[in-house]
Image (cartoon, rainbow, N blue to C red):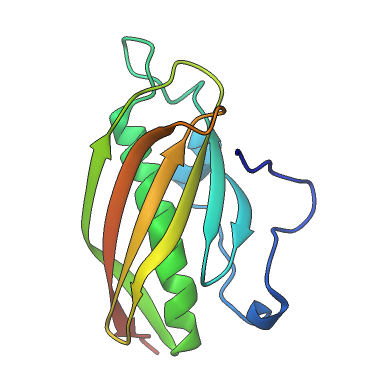
Length: 147
């Protein structure tokens, strides 16, 4: 099942109303990333394959890693915000299962562990048919915000 972006604000749990809001960075914008949902329990984004392909016409593995790391880090920062902290990535690994030549990919980050000093998220990247293209795992260190 592929989540579809909407023209309205991303889906959010009312209890998460004061959470940090995702802002796209320059690379995210160039890659065509769209936020679909943002909460402590789940961050979902989409990205077109077109414009993110390598020379053989396949979705670039580096594009998958970049978008997966971004979505996983956003999820960590949302959690960190509830503790008055911020998050920085310290480890990311990925397994590419298959690729795509066209369409839109969906990137979904869900927590494996939400601690006071570390978070770990699983990030799944799927194609339009819901097939798994890539699985990432990202660990973020939670730090006090600099004043």
